[in-house]
Length: 151
Image (cartoon, rainbow, N blue to C red; front, side, top):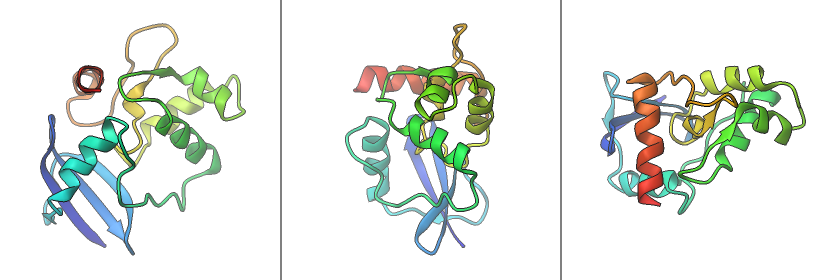
């Protein structure tokens, strides 16, 4: 497995990528030990991806992820930069009305931080909900604010 880190890849710091046979199997905020520097072009590509300008140039590996979770993550990828959708809206979009909590669980277990923008999925009751990446809800709020300003 290849492991890369994009230093200062976002306004929020480093981003680590794990690839297997040329596809991304995991992305996380922060740097994990033993990573090689990511290609320089990934910095602009990640920024463009976050702002909805183009798809990140490396495919995501959804193998081993349940069809429900994969559908929820793909639906999150359709939310435009700087906008949000509720867990319930995502559940309806993927044909599972009433499964808002299951969508929340799918977002909490998202192995592709930033590339699958689970930070754009929020509770119906208001607020921004939880965020499992470094910095928690402060990072989620900062990501949403940054996307809204930059788009």
